[in-house]
Image (cartoon, rainbow, N blue to C red; front, side):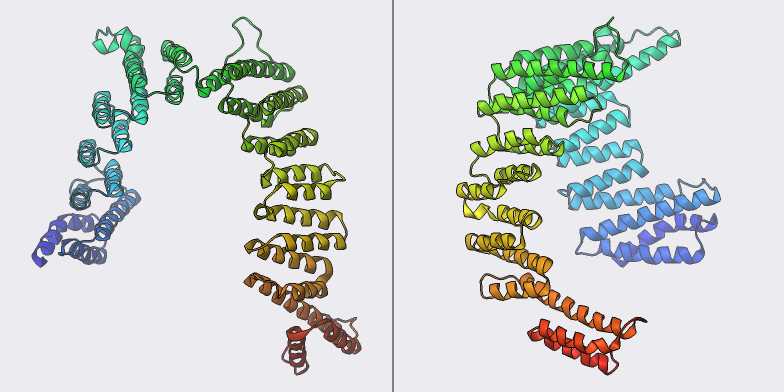
Length: 575
């Protein structure tokens, strides 16, 4: 092994001598490189091999390459790259080859190899790496797509990319992502040919190449991919994804229309089709010849018309396909438009009206999910439409009586509306809900009561809650109760609550820590009070005795002992 390491170090000497000779590295640095290289070589030549050693080796060589680059830039020297950088790159590739042969299943290792070659190696070398990787990982469509994209975008080889996609589809004949990217590639290819032809025509050169035929230039190859793919991959989602790709290419208008027409013909019973057709109305511009809106008001009216057309399609959709999924698409669209910012009061009013109208229809048919009731309530609350939010919340709790979140949202609306019946409605919620989902509601009631009612009322809520909430949830409630007691009544109140609860299991460590913290704060407050009297220019030291006895009356147990100890330290000059 020592002979192999020595041989590999000797192989480095020509490049290291060049580095020193041209002034990129000092003699001391070259010696350090040789020492480090020897250590790295030893680790990848020993009998028991570890992947991390190969990674460290490669990373060191990459760092060295980058350092050489920076120093070349600094001194403005760009010669001898064959003898220096290319030698290092060749060596790193050898290390990668050994590592990828031993740990061939490690995709991340292969990807590191690809990244290295993209930056430092030739395109031919990288193409070979992709081939080797795909021979082992042919079961991963993403790697085929990566290789094909590189062939198309970096090597500018449409034919190589096409061959890779065709090979990939033999392994993955039902992979939607592969078909989609293959479709995109053929459209990019047609676009590239169109640009080439334009350049030839500008240069007044005759072009009679078969690639420049009218069919090819209009995207016929992409159309073939489209037709084949939709015969294999069923469903509107895939169809729409191909249409979205086609719409990126202005020359493919005929293809776009064909795909759009097929979508409506083949997938009439899919909500996604109707959703796409409806939303498309937003993108359709005013008819040619019509005057384009110029004022803000006119633009708002035009947007309103487009949204009306969208809703007309949705209305037809929910009649044709009266399902929860279809109504979800409709309500989601209305919510998106409702939450979209606009300075036009006219547009905001129309959007609210449409949202509420569609909601009422869907609610009557019982074709909305709980999630959509929640989304609608939150959106209406954010925009301060409290009356409408309450309408949705009442409808939601009628339909989902056992949902704690739905009741919580209804109560949130009532609180923001300053309803006089909030306490009664909390009680109503607990009638319908299982005890195990009630904790958030009890906390909400206590928090509301703290801001709106007396201390006695709030404490009554906490006591009721502790009788109703059991198990682990009661731990959270006790902590909240103790916090409230300290906030509202200070240390004495907190102490009383702590005493009343300290025998009531289960406990949490936080519960005791809170009380200890409150006691420490109380001791510190009394000590600071006395210190202020002693040190402030307007202080009255003779008051310290009275303060001391007041503190002793207030503090209890360990707190009193801690206060006495601190006071004693102060008296002896240690405070």
